[in-house]
Image (cartoon, rainbow, N blue to C red):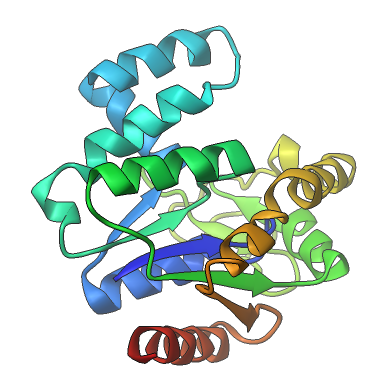
Length: 220
């Protein structure tokens, strides 16, 4: 299976992708993880990306496509993959189509995790993270609080509130999503491969709905 997840920041894409990756032994490919891996391994695309990252600039679309080309061309991608956080706009989607055509592949299904902005804002602004890189545990002040307020259960490090999780920046991130990424729902919808899933319930319920959506698309 070749799956793409769409959904606004805070919709739970990462969580559901990891569960799906584990269940079906599929590669979970997020642009952020690929960037970090490519830079660490000093691949050609990774070195190109590092030049922009070191300057605090956005990595150009072509460099991102080259990152995915490096990964998707490897044998481990042949049995399928899950794309998370890429593409983010129509130009990237069109470039991805070209890349997949080169690899004689195509997306089987696009999962659209639908969540209201009010719930997304509550999820993101309440998120707290452990800054200890060896831990990286994630908590939420309402939904999954630490046992001791502000302290990581696992390593005892003081939790932090990411700057881009502050209310004013969350609204900006959601606005960018609606303007640039949400139109991809129609883009892929025209190909008949989009399945909408309610992203506002319990994680296990959402995951069960995703499995049903995948089964429906793959068997149709």
